[in-house]
Image (cartoon, rainbow, N blue to C red; front, side, top):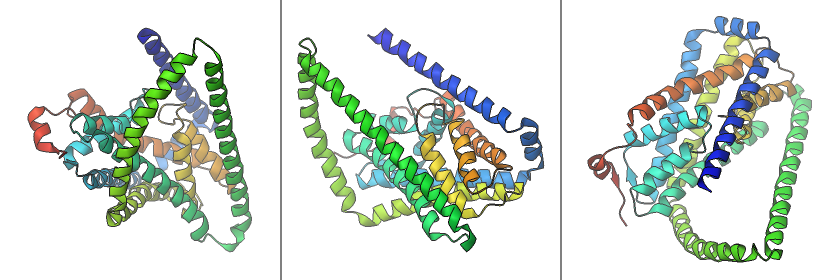
Length: 346
């Protein structure tokens, strides 16, 4: 069973790498490689470095947000080891096809070295959930609150139609998955050989679920009892996501892209959410095509491929510290460091 699982995992990795490579090559070839190279040559290096700096600074804020969620659960980890884990996670998320992403790594680190395992893992889940909600909220608020000119009302209506269509497709996909899951469970229940296994795992899950729900409920109540902490976490979420987008806006302006900043704060967050679908490595190709397609809605297409690839380049460059941390094992402190760095009272 273990060999089959490992083999299927390798096949999955190969498929994701193949999809990423094919999508990236198709994106570059389709959008005039010589033109992209020329655009990068004309890009002011100082502007790009400023954009890179905004992205790096946003990641520092990201780590601070997670630490605040941990401390709300009375779990303390120093900033430096958390920063190491984060940059290692960026490397895993952006460059590797495996299932061990940055969130799984952070959850493992805090759960291995504390008795509050569920609460520690919940902090990672809450961190991701808050980030996702704020990403959607940023796009929503930019769509409705940032003025971009009265003449663009028709463009906004077109965008609204696209968003409605995507929402309908998403809900339809969820419905299909629920129906398929119900059919599989019904088949297992009707099959004599599979029924005992279904009942066994259902019983085990029910017992564990009762324990998990109790501890998760307690943890959530603790978060809710600290509204100031949650408010600060939400503010930090907007800051750490807004900074890299503003950097990309500066890159776009330098490239000569005539698009209001409003659309950057709509399109880039949405592209990140779309890119989170695990069909490629780090969303390669998926994010770039999403950005290009969304900017076409407002009639902007020139230099957008270069802008999308500039974002990818900032991600790759920011992943370099993660490569060094991975190779040197700096994310794995010894026992003495663990005792000093992590205090998790029961």
